[in-house]
Image (cartoon, rainbow, N blue to C red; front, side, top):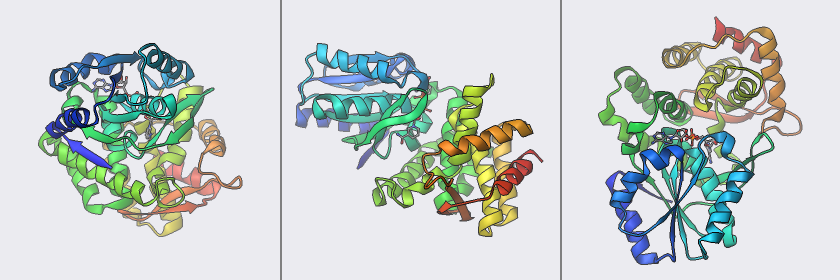
Length: 345
Ligand SMILES: NC(=O)c1ccc[n+]([C@@H]2O[C@H](COP(=O)([O-])OP(=O)(O)OC[C@H]3O[C@@H](n4cnc5c(N)ncnc54)[C@H](O)[C@@H]3O)[C@@H](O)[C@H]2O)c1
């Protein structure tokens, strides 16, 4: 998989179009990326393109939006030699990738992530798809884009909460595979040195890509990318479907990582001092949420829907040390409750 960074990306897009000579270029956006990111692309792309737009937000990553994209492609007379450029966050790259791989059995597509979460996570790895009947990411494929352009310039218009949502995935990358990178991120969270952000993003991209290359279909090591996500997803579902207070993905994963670190201490001899450091770093950057006992029970109940479950058992990713993760670990209900007590203490 080729990645192009900063200004090299637009050169790569122009060269790709010059050499591949697609019959048409379609740029998919959502309401925000149409407003904030499309003008930048428009200024720099040398070729004619048609913009197709969808409404923003994960609630719109659905069959209706997918159908509207297919409909536009049909009306535009798009053939198999067309190129689609997905310009947006995870919603646009997920639904756009799926639209591209299914239309006429597949047209070329390039991912241009515009959120931090998109750059370090969603746009990489080839997973694409839509939500279906309130269940997340139920329909999709794993097909790699032609390449990915990571341009940190797009982040200037991104709201702070969205930025922090992506930053949680970067922290995860440090915790599961690179202790020095974790230290660099902790330093960044204190000094917010924007100059080093592009390098930090690049390191995160490489961590995810290295793991995906070894195990593209998530049969083994790719599972470690789910650290913090087992309880994180359950918290996200609980808050977003059962509560007034919504939570974004990265914020829920941040809580999931504190709980995951504690479960690692209980089950994998992970040092309690490291658990405390993780909790401290995360709570300096993400708000503490006061779950009462009924909420904790409901969250635990939601674990039964986790995609990694095997034979009815919930499988966790845990840490053996900072920078090293293990997967397919079962933990007791009691430990999970204790982990929540630790989080709230
Ligand atoms: N395919 C994968 O491997 C993978 C991995 C993680 C997450 N995901 C999916 O990604 C989605 C979440 O991605 P996300 O966090 O990027 O959300 P998103 O795409 O919904 O973007 C978040 C918000 O930011 C806006 N936005 C995007 N870029 C902007 C910019 N540069 N300036 C201003 N506003 C901008 C969007 O319009 C949206 O309102 C979920 O659907 C999730 O399931 C997929």
